[in-house]
Length: 601
Image (tube, rainbow, N blue to C red; front, side, top):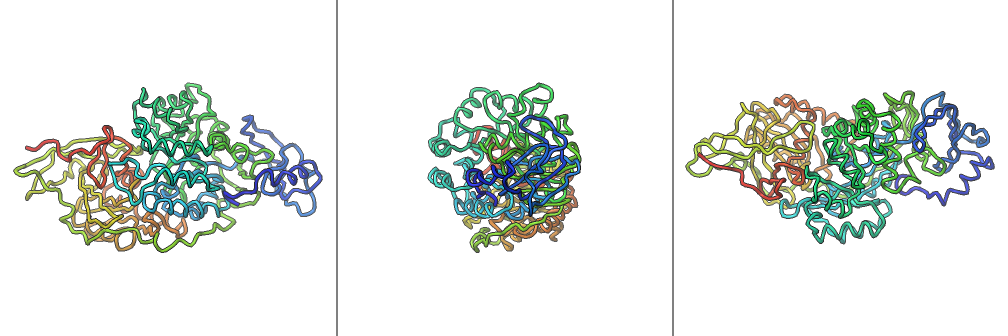
């Protein structure tokens, strides 16, 4: 099952015989309310017959499809809706391997995922992408892979563990589970006509596959037009109604995301609910959801419920999480609806607004009941090299996290990264900071802490230091993570240089993950040994450790919603306004390295 699913052509003779009543179905669901996303209507008193993992008959009476050995489920008036699709996401953000991610989301009704493994691509290159692709193919749901496009995401502004080339993209386009090119984050490169970026897009289009977009800019003028002209077909970086409108007017699909920390549905869905734009060009997605969100709050069911809460008609919201996604990736004849020939992925629910997920069927089998998974999710045997990717080069000390002041300065005006709650963009702030014993201090009263990026791919021992505001940390603490989108070095944020060193060295010891220290003691540790990004432990265990991490951050004074996601994106040098990389502080509005200090006094 999974990505390598028998084709419609291979199963057509059986489907025809079952629909005509000449052969028995494997499964018949009777007396349900068929939610038809093609016609946007609910049909009462309907039956669905399934054979060979696909829908064979959908209509008022499937009695002619029932024979000896046919399993029968009485829907008892429940709504029968298509399995939910996540149109853009990164499995690694769940801190889980594809198998454990599938285990976490199946009970929530997700049966199709379009994932871009560009996190592991930055660490392990094409080999890492292949491992993700291969484990995805083993799963009982459809996990389609988009070949990462940008490693590094912004050439010249960061150094990745491995670089992705156009030849890598062309090779991946021949793999059976690859459905397109992952988000084209280097939008300045596309706009400038960069040969490497255009070669990747060309290889994808030549293969007849979809090019994913990522336009993280407020400029909707000629620069945006140039980006669209380059080939990206969708975009999930919009944060306002004007962004969604601009994208669909230019022929893109607007992907509205609700992740663990990105709340961009409410601000954009008014393009449909108030402005009346055609909803078939809008897609719901998660982008980044960590394990705690997946286990405790949900996945695409959470996004659909949120869209409905924002005023979207339930049937339209369901289209945005099913048929719209399938159509965008040219898979409308395979997934995204309950209709003859499509893969038999569906949900039984008693309410279209609150969307309780009572039964999940994938490929014609019941895979979850009342929130409990009913099947196995096979694992790959991940090679040892992927568990040894954190190379610090030395034992770090408090001195590595000191910021030397310009000679003779008593105070400095420093550039400060400003965290924005529930948003991926940051603010480029400035602040006057004190100088003590020749080094620049922090300002707890104004919520300014230290941030450092520690090189971890080649063991150079390099540390780039700066300042960050918005986390609310107090006292002596530090938090470190080897999840550091997208180059995935190590990000350390703290108020204590000694604790910052302890946290960084700790992650070097365990091979990657997230840790929180306070007053010299470790409060929480989430071990992520695979590429320093993922764990192959059960999702429930990882979620519990992640919850301990969230509680540890709160114990250090942080009150932001899902602040870990903001932490992990502080090195993402393709989203404005200010970021940090192994090469220095990055002004993402100008796409250039910028000095830490503006002036001295």
